Image 1 (cartoon, rainbow, N blue to C red):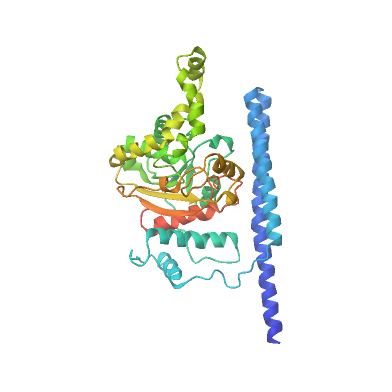
Image 2 (image 1 turned 180 degrees about the vertical axis):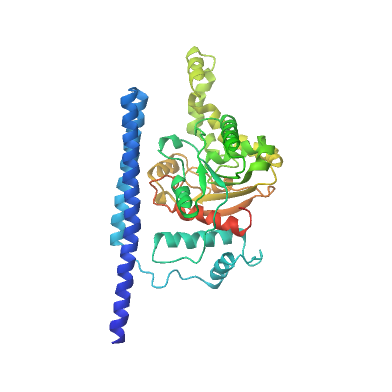
Length: 403
């Protein structure tokens, strides 16, 4: 009789788990379909209103992104139906992990001897990530309200995608905590000098209409470099209105990829800068992204940070998170990047992890290196952006920085 009761309970748990996971994946698919229809419809309307090649390109891009997102969502839903993994009692945490979770949840201070900042953040993230992928597991962590406005700044070539990097994750925070967010324009192919000035103009304009708000900047990839330059140039504004800067996979100390032989060979065209054709092209566009490459080069950015870190405002907090992935764990574009621009250092396909963390001489908080390729911030990514950004909120609240 006892065996029958146990089997029945196990079956009930598995059925509940099945429907919980399917519900979450179905919601993901519904969101992908709804937003894709809105995007494509908007692009068609703009093309009909103003027919030109540029609008046609935008429509084709929207169709490509939407089809990718929807197909990924279908695959995700199907995968949830055939997933056979079982977690009878949730993750098997050791004593230290449970100690960290309990301390964070009860706002009890943890000495550095018992756990480092990196261990605390990773423990928070791992628990939330497990709960995200296994909805039958209920995390004990509570996400506090966020009394600020998030400023989301994307990175290189983000214009290819329909939304800013990590916007899906920020929307999750908005639904859960009511936090507001804005996405200033910072073109991924423009120089850091251009973008830092643009960020300053847009944030000052926003604060003019919202003078009582505090801003938390979350920057991805080159957006982190642009944000650092902005903060160094706008110290007075930052001290008054910026709570902090959190970078994700940002080449804080630059990228060595700009010194690769392929780019060096291509950049030899700049030797013909006196040519009339070159001058014409250079006057119209950032020819071969010359200023953009300079902004990201290790030679330029590492020296800039060493010279200017003392100019960064002291009041805001600074956190940095790096990513790592093997070629077989990456997005198709990241696989190609790893093939053409190989690196012996730990990297996410674009940025070397060692360059995405703050150097020892700067008092920033390094949150360590976690698994993930450089395109985890796209809206169609299977990656748990929601858990990643929620982990930032809980960690910063625990450290009494986000208030």
